[in-house]
Length: 414
Image (cartoon, rainbow, N blue to C red; front, side):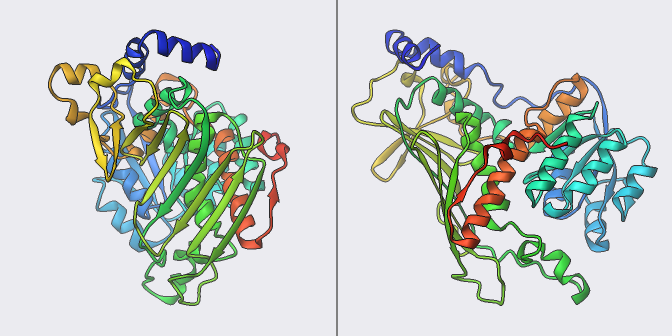
C-alpha cells in the first residue's frame, strides 16, 4: 500500500479500524512464554550483565547455569544475584567447561565483543551480544560474518525493535499518521561522570574503558548507536554523511573523551537527524522525536506519545486515547490494546511498559532460540547501527564531515 493509499484509507475509515488493528498487533503486558527450557550463561558481570541476570530470572524456563568476569569483585557481585551458579574468570574456560550451556549473553566492554562472540559461535552456542556490536567497523563486520555462518541464533541488544511502545509507534509512523516527515531529533542526557571507582590502580584503566581513547567510541557510539537504530527501524534508510562537535564541559578531570557532544546525520532525501548527548545534565533524559506535518511522535523507551497538530484531521481511535499534558502541549499516550483497556475502564494501567526494555529484547532472543526462528535484531543490522555510531564518534572527534561509504552498511566482509 502506498503512502497515498494508506492516507486515504485512514481518512475514509475514520482511522478506527486501522488503529484497532495496530493496537492488537502487540501483546502489551503479557509475560514472556518460551516453548522450551534454555540453559544460559552471562559473560561480563558489570552493570549490564547484572541487569541481564535480573531480567532473565523473570522468564520462566530460563536457567542461568554460569557467569563469567575477569574482575573478581564483579564476579562475586554477579554470583550474589544468581543462586547455585558456576563461576568462571575467563570466557574460553566457560565455553570449554560449561557443556550444558545452550545460549551465551555477552555483556563485556564493547571492544572485547569480537573474540568472545566468535568463540561462542564456534562453540555452537546461541549468542546474544550487547550493542554496540564492536568498537571498530572491522570488528562489526567480522562479528556479522560469524553469525551468517552459524547454525545457531545470533541476536544483538538493540532494544527498540523488541520494545512494545516502539513497535506500536512504528505502526503509526508507517501508516502515515505523521504525514510528511519534517525533522528528527534524539538526545541522551544523564548526570554521570562515566568514571568507575577501581579497587586498586591495576584495574583503573580496564574498568574505565569508556574513558580510554584507545577503546572508547564515546557518547555517540556507546549511547547513540541504540538511538540511531530507532530511526533505521522506523524508516529503513541510513544516513549518508555526518557532522559533529564535542567538548569536555563539566568533568574536567584529565579525561580525553568528550562529556558533551552534538551531531547532524544527513540522509539522501534531505532529512536530518539532530543528535545530542551530555554527561553534565539529566534534563529530559533519553528520547527520540519524529516531527511530521500532522503530528509528532516522542519516544522515551518505557513511554511514548503522539502530539497532534491543530489542523490535523481527527481520527476515530482518539475516543479511546489517554492523554497527558506537557506544558501547553497535550500528548496522546501510545498504548497497545487501548480499546480493550478503555472498555474495562483500565486505560491508564497501560501507560508505560510493565518491564524494562531489556526484558523484551532478552525474551525475543530466547523465543527465537526455542522456536527456531530468526532473531528480531540480527548481527547484520546491529553492525550497520554500530558502524553509524562509530562514524559519528569519528566526526565528533575530528570536527570534519564524514561521508558514509554505502559499502560499509552492506556488511559483506567474510
